[in-house]
Length: 393
Image (cartoon, rainbow, N blue to C red):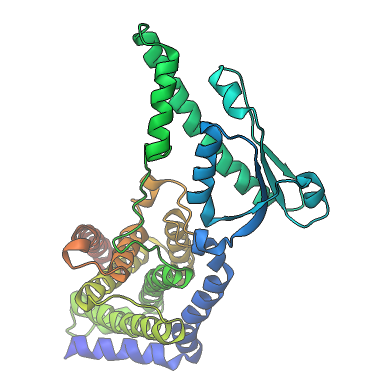
């Protein structure tokens, strides 16, 4: 009953503050919406790049010209709509702003390259659309790098096997190119379990859920210090009440508030932004619960070593902001993977991200174990420190 009394008192203190209530329920969805809209194009990746027309003139009928045709029609087709400019002046078309870029393959390209001379593919632009020009340059650069690697391999084989004539190797290379194309080595990128990356709204829903749950614990820490400073704790302790009962009541009250906050964020993002948190409700609940436990433990640690309630709030917010920044929670950019692994946010966010992509409980097992380990460590440290501080009050 004593624990329940402290829990109910903690809830009354919170619900008494209308500002805290408004911040709890409305601030997270607003921030998620703002960040989701603002940084949406960054998260949409290649899907944000619409195909655009370019003038294309290929005068080379040799194997290099044919290989380049094949390359643009396959890999380049995701971005480029090739407009045949044969018989026209490509420079004039680009200068008159009809097209942003022109690609011109000279007639003697294959002949030069097979003689060991340097050849080039011209990309002509005016600098008006730097993004499109850079994209075309990157595509052609990728083709050139691939071809240069193949030539280097051919030359190396000729050095190792001098009895083979160069023409034989070139003819063999030409036959393979005609039959199989030039994409001998394919690069596969594993994006996620279901082949899709998170949208900006999914990313910030998960990131800010963790952020606000961690911040919420600082309020409990500041209230503990206030009650110690104004003598409330001493008056409570005059009754047959154990410090463990006092702390447990505080923790349960703060935990219930955090659960309400988590539900508010999950439901609001589900209905406002159509966020799918996954089908694994047990995994989602365990992740949220562990973050709440860590948040409460962190608040206890701060309340044990920081002198004032104001300092607890400041220190708690600075620590949470720093961890969120290092883990890439604000922009998705991770400065250092090793530093990110030292944060709570990294393991909690990875767990939520996997759940959003349909992971099972086994798929987030490592994340849950690490979060549980952090919670146990912080709780042991916090209880040890707070008991020492209360013993001296």
